[in-house]
Image (tube, rainbow, N blue to C red; front, side, top):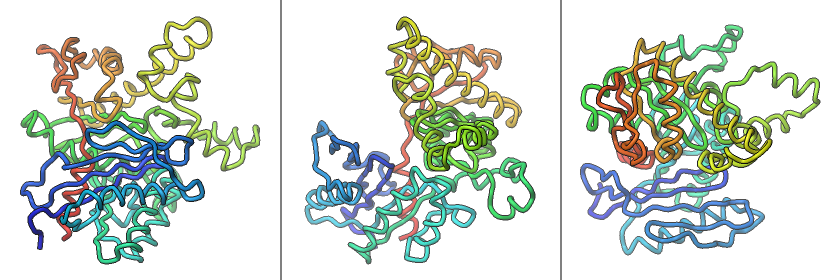
Length: 398
């Protein structure tokens, strides 16, 4: 029974940061804004810090032997100090991969946790850290429900034709398929867009989740029908440090001719490629753009990195337009999509053949609708809210 003041804690665990948010579970409907949120970032690095609502980040000391557990302890201590007699009735976790078995949120016990451990090779940048947090909290508070909410879950509506990979048939039977990711973000788009855009949101929609990881989702009737990430989070768009779609022959070349080990190839594909790899400057577009006018190779690499990033976005959007049979609404979300006007402008400039026209002033102001009145496609910005989706999912299981 949910009592007045009860809370749901949401944890979003990445490889070097843990985001958290507390939602008032006793308010119906669940507020979209958390009562309190923050993050520990720089985990495993030389200068980790803790930031929270209304407070500038400040340094924290983490045990160098077990920095991730130490970061979880920091969050636990801060949360407990803030409860003031209130109770947490569930912890919702963003878990990247649910495999073929888990589409809906699930309360995690030892058996479920063991299942989810088997999917670590499918999402090595994210899966281990979410599971470490679940395992730690199961030990500390075995009676507190831990709810896993899956980034792959939203894409279970994608037809088999979009899921199947052109490998031998038994690979499909073994579970090698396109799963898709960023599902909590797209789930939020499906909830939020009708309120902003009415029936248009139920038409032919492409949501562009552009962050350090990046993907696109084609939606019809608010359901996923195609997406750019596939079997792993390496597929599709060029990203901050990840390649996106890549000729597998290039991977074979790196291993066979250049003699890179499996571990070394993984590091190149996940950590040394994308915007960082091409520019040699940063994985952040807003940093790279400041170097486009630099002389010599530095400027050339900066220009090439951003041009390739935009080109890959445009090509993948166009491919999804073909799947949808047209486009009614294009939505930008996540860190790059929400805050980088110049990326939106360049992508939309190259989509002019679809009838996309931006309102330059609205785009610079990060307005909700940034297309012009004469644009044949509405272009919008919608801040994502994965934590709210996870909290709401958790409440459905209590």
